[in-house]
Image (cartoon, rainbow, N blue to C red):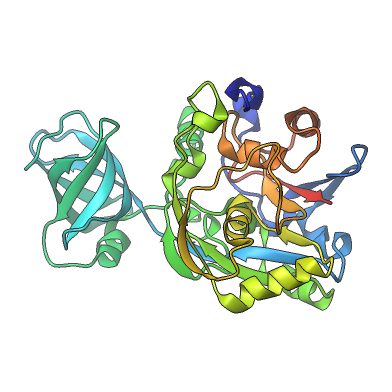
Length: 359
């Protein structure tokens, strides 16, 4: 059992990246080792072809982020509305959403608009409250698909801490460049309401250089849900109500990763979502599509994962627990690494710098 307060550390707001590095692969890269506590190298992401070996395999999550965040007005009161699309509801033409607004009641209508396209409007009608934290079933007024409606009015679903930090610093909150910078260059399958952020550092040129260097690659899909970044609020980590996410691996990919691992090749997921996907399928034998609610924390017995490329994560998060599980010393070692990163002014969280954990 792990106490949640063991996942705490002091993260100054000044260390939270409000925007990505000017060039994706120019982000800083802190290289550490699971087996060598003395290894601590300061590199940049574009150094990866020189750091990794020809027998290494990177695993990428090909999910595509949808423009799930929206804003608008309560058509009855004129009050501001903010929300997040969570997915389609069972009834055709209805959505599951998270709403932030003052007054809620079934039948109330809200008008959504895009800040850069005032003529693009989508109207929603509240149908049924699903939970006390603001989850609702809403109906889209008019005949249009989810994709069409979100393309009209949706915004990149940047984490609330980035939006809040921009607002407090007096910066423009919604930026045109967020549309492509909060999306990996290899994104394919639509379905995420948050980006697999470690993958944001890759460019087509860097991917080509990695292939030329002989580094292998595999692709999986895990659609990232809002629960991924929620803080742990229970006193004990294992009592946290773990969210589930849909992930997909085809049989050739699972067979390739399994045989490569058996042959001693190093499997290194790019991001905690890729890691979560392959560990959820490890040992199953059969590939396909599943809902995974796996919780990885110190003491976990790794099956396919040898290393990990990841960003720096929020305090008291399940993602932090997953990364700590890579080290024999658990959070003690990870806290030392994070202290070093803070001292060297690495940029943290979704738009921040990265860390490469080698075996």
